[in-house]
Image 1 (cartoon, helix red, strand yellow):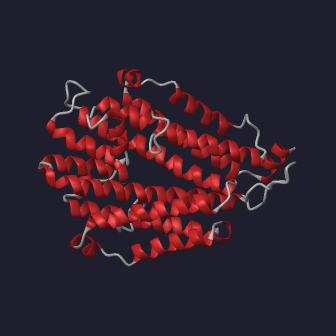
Image 2: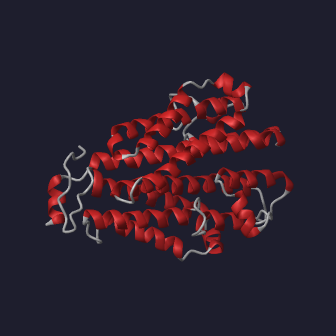
Length: 341
């Protein structure tokens, strides 16, 4: 059971955040990040699918279902782009649909209204109301690109309001944790599914032919990375460079490396304010994951197997999520007293 007790008062007069508040802020942020990711991936697919051969578009739909719903979902049931849009946009039975994610984010925000600014609540509530009044028929008959692009813009607006309106305290850092753990998992999963599929039949895994060029560009756009990638590598699309950029670049906000750096930074701030010992498991896990990325070389990763490496990252992110819960959210009051004492 989640502890409802506030933490003990530290030497600096800081009070540890209520675990239920930390939980709600963390999941509010994760759900919004997921909604943004699903909307962007769907928008990219609907943009490039008309230019693809029928079979290539079908395979891409299957990969999106694997990434955005789950590998266990029967992808053969999604036989058209309209089916895909229905599944990922307003399907109430799909926990990762845009509507379910936004509803989850809004519910968590509602539970901590006193901890967020009025502008944050207004923004997330407005986004929730807009998705509640949407219908798939109107979206599809109108301009789907505008609808999904608007979801992205509204999430970015919420993140901008958050970063400009609240102090950099524990609450803000739990929001950061949710955002960047979700982002690291998403990028690693996309790389794993797409890279494996696109390079499966290619004799040279660093050569892109005309048939797969759109796919690689779609991978970059789905991770909000095409323009940033092009500035660094030009528009020459090379799979190894894409992996290096999305996995190891420490300066691009949607790379795995950048996300883990941000996670570790927020954990350090939270730990100082909560007076959590630096030897706690959550810090060891974050430090090991960051070191794993700090010293990695893309050619060595690909030679030894990209898929196992990415699955390892996702597994470590899952362990980190559990450790955050054990340390700050589901701890017993006895454990907290022992840490403080």
